[in-house]
Image 1 (spheres, rainbow, N blue to C red):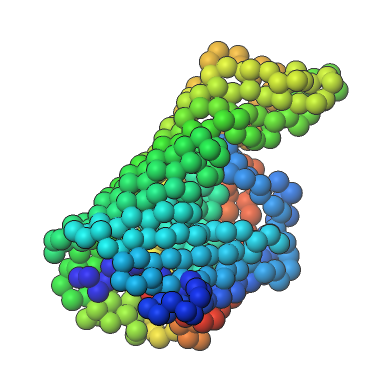
Image 2: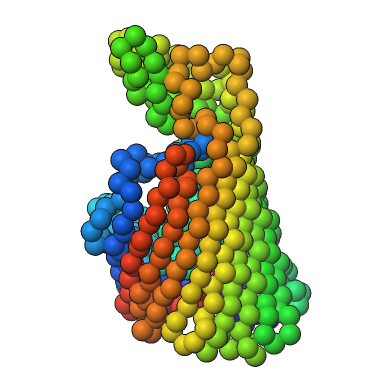
Length: 401
């Protein structure tokens, strides 16, 4: 069954040619899309603290996240990889790590900047997704994905059943925590083949982070009317993710036909203190005001199915759902100065239905058409149409299970 559980290796790190036992590889991933939907200036998921800045839909062909990936095998004992991503006109180091392969007994150690191993989809880059965008769950939890600056230790058990266990310790690189406040993660993945045509993988993950003055935008009210203020949360965030994937391919050969079912569920609990700040002279939040304690619990997930019915052609359906669940404020009058319509604190159940069809000219290029009915914003039904292309240039390794 090891033939199925192959880790993602997108490409290879360019290193000096003088190193005799290094085979450097390079890969360039180009992505672009045309999307049409409602032009909502501040897009956010109702009932959820915004994970970064949301932008209005651009009704033109745009360059999506584009990656330059370099990796290399450093002898027999280690591997290095660097991912540079162009996103929103800015270049950032998405991944940059060194992994030891020579610890023995199934252990590997990775250090640097990497995508966390929690859940199923989080480790995958956008070009490997089956849909044009991330599930609502991923957007609500992490923005796009959760990355660590730190260490990751993995152990694969020497058994016929695939058993992988991992632990991570980092400085808390991004949402829902804060930079330099620390983050830890644990995960376990199990999987196996069922006969010659079926395979499955299941996982359970836990993430713990700390936030310091994590910011969101609220509205308060005074005699002059509504004002925009900054809401600042300081406290702990705990997230549990369960994932399951089932694959079918006749006689284990996915070239002609194959089917994939994928789902993830989450529960997030947060507790801490909330404050607001404003520079508007008449605002109740002028100069920064402590609002009291905040406790929240949120759940949700997604389920999707993708069917390749003939070579090069696939169709898929995905359903996303979120629950704002419970929020408790201490004292109960903590938001007396704020507009009760603040979307971050609303009790609402966002959901979205998406269908897609894609055609792959080869393993290096893909065109995708996607339709979505998005009700993640209260009072807004957004019917979205997305046309996307993905193209890979250079060496490109196998995707994960």
